[in-house]
Image (cartoon, rainbow over all chains, first blue to last red; front, top):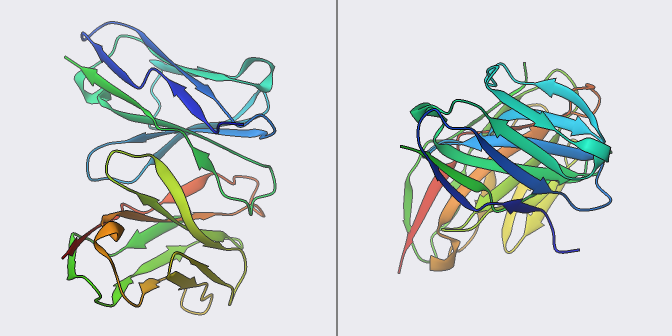
Length: 114
Length: 114
């Protein structure tokens, strides 16, 4: 297993366009998390899944954001009608469902909205 | 809700100096505690963890002890190296609360001078 992978690594888009990011977690991990990180800040929780079920969605996630995890494997995060304030690093992580093991993070997708 | 507070950076030290990065937390349950590190241009990776009170996590010369009485998890290293320059994040996850998302502090940037 090569760890958590995210695609693309970088995305530049024009304001108003839609973007979609993909995350492939470590295969045996049931939990999958999405975070957003801006410069000089820690990762901010966006949403997470237990298998295919979305358990929680942060208030940070406006209606323009949607995430899915079909079949409990990979996940996608879509941002509709992007705004400049959406520019950030989007991080995906996965972990086992025992609450004590650590989460493993991907390299992230850096989004720049121009 | 649960939260993590860590000392603000940047912290600048000379090589071989002693390092302490303070971290305190607020949690309603019994969290697991983590220190993650982000080296320049790389993703988040686990540095060490502790899952119950009085546990000591250690890795690469770094240590942190889970102190329930002071709700703290301070990171220490006896002799830092230039290669330790990175951003360090304290984090918690509370499985006993169904909501076991991982909460991060804002991060502390560490610069080690040769």
